[in-house]
Length: 491
Ligand code: ADP
Ligand code: MG
Figure 1 (spheres, rainbow, N blue to C red):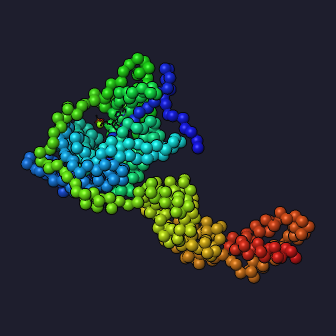
Figure 2: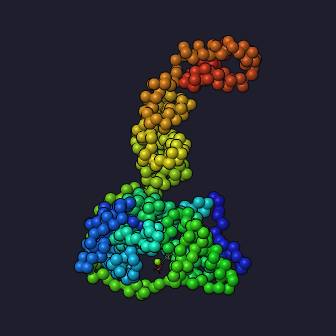
Figure 3: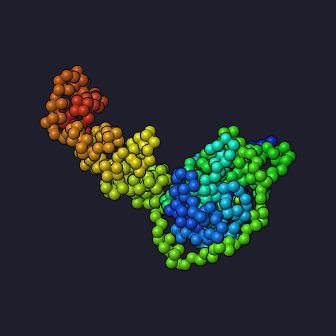
């Protein structure tokens, strides 16, 4: 076991510990919005997915989308969290140009999901458990488009009213690596559950990053909150930068102001946006247009039953029942598409080929996918073709050397391995006639080496094996080659 040093920021007065809590906004995968029937898909022409409710026309009434409730509950269950049978929607009042209602419908006092946790394995640091404080459902705002016109700002309301889950962690994270692992694991879990596509480039997942620093053993320091950070790398950078800034302020005798900040990736800095507002500034009150939400036992049971096997369980099974290494199991379960591909391959070959399948995916397939920038769902080689290839190796139809060639051709052309082997005559040769002929020629052209071998230079055996394999273009069955060489060299 390697022990990892605690992550700290060094300063003049000694080392400082970082404390981080993340509020992750995850857009719920649903056809329509949280309170309207307008489409919620990404990338449509501006303002083409806006109902009268989303545009906040007077007299319009919100109607809760049951699918969004279901996804929030399934997410809560996947995080081993309490599901609240009673929850309620509140209005959070504020003005912004892309918020036509003048308030956001959210859940402050009675969120749908309570405490849970997520286990993480940060790079180079010890595994740890991160507490989840709550998950609540809320509406997203529209989008202000500042670069469409020289002097004006456009407003696109397509996103207005889309459902978000706000997943709030406890202030349990202690390093950038832990925060990075938390966001990665959460993203993976949401994608397994199917409650969020996790597409950070499209803004489906973004994090508010709360950071404070303290001396070991001291109570928590004052935190700042950096808003809308939209990649794992940027979350980690925000923590580095913000912790460094806070340590410098504190060591110069200053105090940290609780405030909202902004991360600027171009200048690699965080900047103050506004002083921190409190809940009472928003004049929260229960939304009078919506009834409290009560969930039945049956509904929660149905949500639980609909969950797929989750990454932790899958990984344990890959290690235990399939005998994969810890590392391989982690890599193959990190994304559900990879796990599905692997399982489809061994569905074809049977579990005895699990290790071979894992090796092939990680050493042959991954490299090609990465080079071409293609996700595994669009792999040029289907799981069925991969099973066939592994089957041909296992039954000795092709040798390992040839398999490597066939694999390369498959990945290039997408052809079936059988077709490639047949068309190019790559089947393994076990026929002793052909092998003896090749050996005979090699012995005839290397009389000195034959004499040396017979005189006791055993090491030369490898030379003869190599020559024979080369003469037969790698297609000879190695066991037969060995056996025939032994016999023929014996003279
Ligand atoms: P608010 O509603 O004002 O944003 P919360 O208490 O809900 O405040 O906390 C929001 C986030 O801030 C949570 O993720 C929590 O873990 C984190 N947090 C709270 N206190 C601290 C602290 N001292 N340092 C770092 N993060 C903190
Ligand atoms: Mg907050």
